[in-house]
Length: 215
Image (cartoon, rainbow, N blue to C red):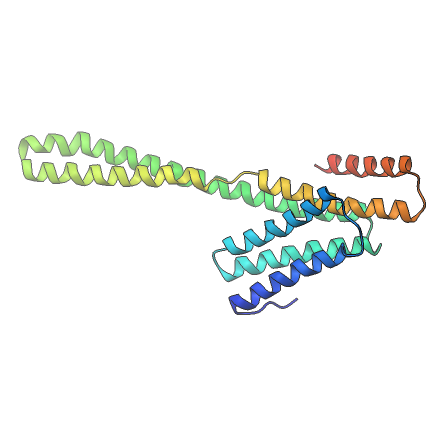
């Protein structure tokens, strides 16, 4: 799928993704819980799209959204099995988890850098600036002041690193919602095959077991 160059056109494509996702479930009655999860999936991608800082990030979110829609559509038509669809979703989730780990490792390195820089400026102020005041008050005062300002700036940058860390929780919650949408088609197929409620419960338990094993 080709993606537009303008940001406004990308927004139109995001809205098209919302409509395509709703179309997949349009002919199926959803309970309140599943319908709420469907809306949460839409909200997840919508927020990620608007938080994206550049065009390439927005396009990647659209690609991932379209990939999810394709998996759900192929599963609903029986083109791919639920197990295969779960594997595809698990691969997507694992890929993003690896990216989060790499991102956090980079932030740790940045935090260590600012910690070392802060220590350097602190010792510079203590061992150079303050003793220099006794010899040359003006130069000593300027050196101490500059070291103190740089120390404060480094500490501020270091503290800002803590806000950059990412957790798995939003990603795992979204993956769980998407799996629930996928497992919905297992229930629909069971009903179309004339399974009893007990058999439907067994199928749902099997789907849940498959999901837990993959996690």
